[in-house]
Length: 176
Image (cartoon, rainbow, N blue to C red):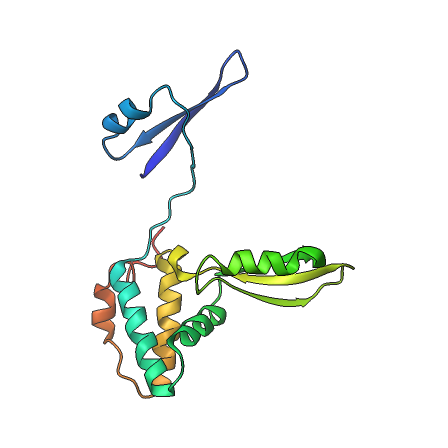
């Protein structure tokens, strides 16, 4: 649910009270949850990519894979590794490296890791890539743009710019 943080106050017992204004009717959920233990997650709102953009990415991946006669999953995974803004580098202790990689990669087919030496003894630098299921509209646009470039290089027909602009989230990629 989307909303805005309005206030943070402190009770005499040290408790912290958060006031949140929400954009949807929350009365029914409030009545069900009031007084009981709940799980709370608050994070900055980011416009999600559209399902149309996701579908177009899958079409491009399929066409590229068919043209190259390679696995669609490898086309997808390579595209993720090729764009910026969807990875981080972590230093992981060597004793935990294989377990960390296995757990990370179990999140989905786009969730990948690459390793490189670390200057710290007993550690390895791990590049972690997030799968596209977590991408916002801007990140999905980067992925689609990369796939379009690959498709054009292979002579594969792609959407006209006017059609691309109609994909929700694509044309408005750089709005705040």
